[in-house]
Every structure is written in structure tokens, then in C-alpha cells.
Image 1 (cartoon, one colour):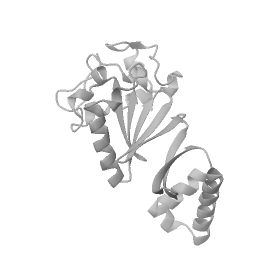
Image 2: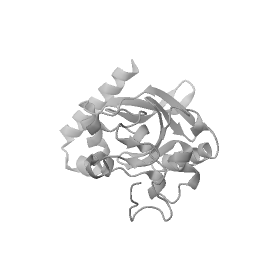
Image 3: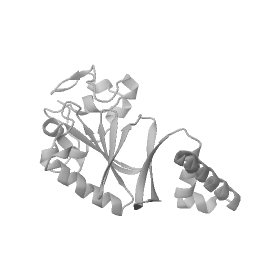
Length: 215
């Protein structure tokens, strides 16, 4: 068993749970998502805990650190792992592919929809990762993006179509040059320090990328 930390919710621990060792990618160990880590003693803990990679040390399980996440979300029971990120503002639910539809059942789905409503008010996003298959959940429904690689990001934009205005979700590689232009336009401090020509060029790059995507 791995020891609890001071910032864990009172009464919660990793005891009896090793789902993060299956559902998450561990780049340092060349371990893909949704496969058990070869160093995991399933249901007990990490066999190389003292020498585990930095990405494992830095991982924060949402169930352990967020008191507003109910006890029914304990990964050993729910077969799902929740992570939270601030940049971009995103809550991700990693789902065990052996129970692919569990997130669609209550009480989990009701929680997910509530989180989606909160996220929408704060320019955030709720993402469901089921193996390589990814869904974005919004207050109005969900969008299946299909396979999304770990090196890809999800970009959301408002778009008007024949049925009215809506939100479109697009995947883009992290190292795509357009990402620098998007970050410049999104970061208010960076935009203030940029020249008018730099901002115009960033807008041109983003508009061209979106136009290419729309073809």
C-alpha cells in the first residue's frame, strides 16, 4: 500500500486501489493507456514505489484530493480515474475499457453533467477517455472525437451552422505551429506585450488553420 499524503481528503487513501496504474499512460515506462503497468501489484500498489517515475510522483487522483467528488468515485469501485488540470481548464475521466459504459450510468453520469455545466461557465471542458476513444461532454450533450493521441490537444470553438450556433471540438498536435499563435491570442498578458503586427500574424495563422480544417 502507498502512504497517504497530507492534502488527501480526510479518510481517503489509495488502499486497495491501483486503477491509475492501468488507465493512465506512463511515458517514462513506455506504458500506454488502459494496460496494466508491469510494475503494478494489482490491488496492492507499486512494486517500484520508491523509484517510480516523476510523472507517477506528480500524479494527483481527483478522488483523493477533491472533497466534492463523492465516495462512489473511488477508482477501485467505479473503475474510473479523475484528473484535473488548470491549463487548459479541464476535468478528465479515464474509463476502464473493460467497463466502457459505466460513466453513462448514475450516479456517475449525473455528476458528469453537473461538472459540464460548471465547466461551461468557466471556459472549461469535461473529457471522457475510454481507451483511445475520447468524448467531450457539454451541458447540451456530448461529442465523440474518436481516437485522440496523447500528443494531441482538444480545441473548442463556437461555430454557426445550418441548425444554429454550436460548439465544435477539434484535435491539434501539441507541436503544431498554430498552437503558439493560439496561445498568444488567448494569453492576455502576452497579447499586451505583443506588437500589432505580431497579433495580426497570429490571427492570420489561426484563421488559415481553421479555414483549412473546414475544407
